[in-house]
Image (tube, rainbow, N blue to C red):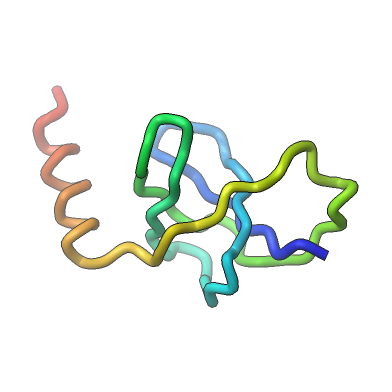
Length: 82
């Protein structure tokens, strides 16, 4: 079984990521590597087991739990948007 976490980015649909063994709960901020680079996302569904055959592709892993500095950077960027 694969531990899967559902992550949502601002203005996007939810995406599945491997938990990387991290203990996460709903609402936690995380840093993940996407095709666009490192991004901040929020856990919308904590880790749960999924059969490997039910996964469409290899999952990317969560890099780390977001720090207060990461959260502040996200707030600063949001404040600059029109």
